Length: 188
Length: 109
Ligand SMILES: [Zn+2]
Image (cartoon, rainbow over all chains, first blue to last red; front, side, top):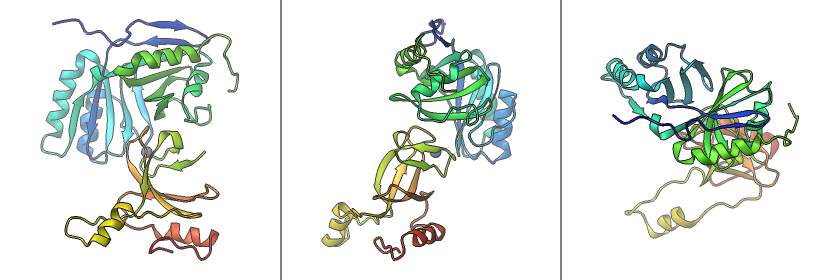
């Protein structure tokens, strides 16, 4: 089998915050009735984290569950574990109305880290990312400049950003430009 | 800047995260309808200076459609509500009546 390479894998920019393109990450879209215990069991079983509430992301390391919409979550697992995770969830959800789609290769993942990582994100999205409005544990689908994206915080100084793989270069360049030394805003 | 509260994901979405969907609560008239009804469904739209009801989609967000009631003159938002409703909910109509006494829009008000 050929080696899997993520979009812009290994690209790094050291500005007033650090921007990194991550390696491959397993991302599985699960749609269905989020209130159903069978769906909660299926997703938490493979991700090993608590089921998130509205607008939340529960992530530990490479695993997690992000709340995407009232009928959709995104399950994160290490890339190599995707086939197994999909199989296990299909088994648990068999016979119920649901959809499971492996979207790993359709997405790109970036890390923005540093004391002023918030500033980089705030320059690009209309979402309120002030420390009082956005903290680790929360999840936000929004746009970065002209393309759809979503992000959550791994810790107080690190954002994880996802977008469509087809716009990975655009998003990396946006983050890079927003992190240019000398362009600090100092708002937060 | 227009900011609408998405009733599906709870986000206060900025206008640039939303896609406009035109007038709310249109009733579709199809092939068996009268020419007059069909023309009205296709072409006749409200264009009020004041209270208005619209459809919006949380495009750069949860992706869901919803309804919004707002004032086109002041940009004041009276409220947003589920896309599944075929008419504005009573609490939103009451709120509008408190702020714009005597308002009317199509068959509502
Ligand atoms: Zn929404």
